[in-house]
Length: 196
Image 1 (cartoon, rainbow, N blue to C red):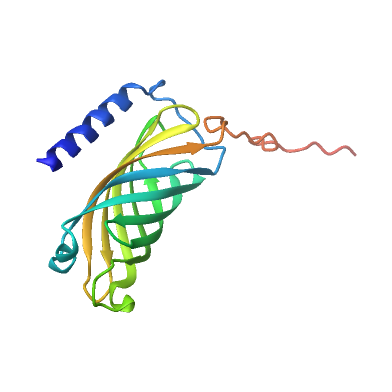
Image 2: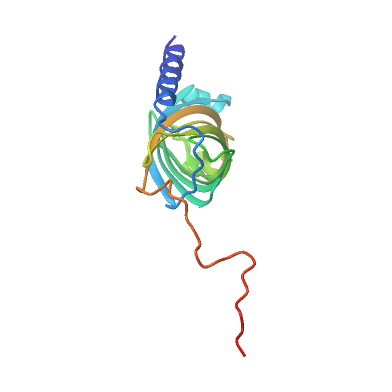
């Protein structure tokens, strides 16, 4: 019952925020290279060993995006999964399918995660991780973005922990995000004249 309520609230929030988007189909070129913020959500355990600890975890993340092309970014996320001292970090890549205010994306990354277990050594619960995600980034204003994503985690520890989740977050960026960066020093087919 609570799962349905949480998903209903997230869905209504997503619809409300989509209606708040100010400009439609405006092509943008990121002049700034960084956006950062926080996201919250839930992670559902997919393997029996992790399910013994908790079938669902609350997830809180610090999100960082570093844009290096119009439709590509690097990401660095720090994650906490509650209850308990469960944590991780992921470094990845995102590809955005459009340059408009509504930008669907996919991504993948690598990192390391730890899920706390009683009577189990740290090294058995800690391991390298793989992450894949799909989602949507909504430009609410020039400096504020709303991010919705569905991540899938695999931790290569002794238990091969796996989980799928849903999260929503808010990101902040510099003031001149939508300004097109121009190159004034380049002209097409320009050849200087030589004087004799």
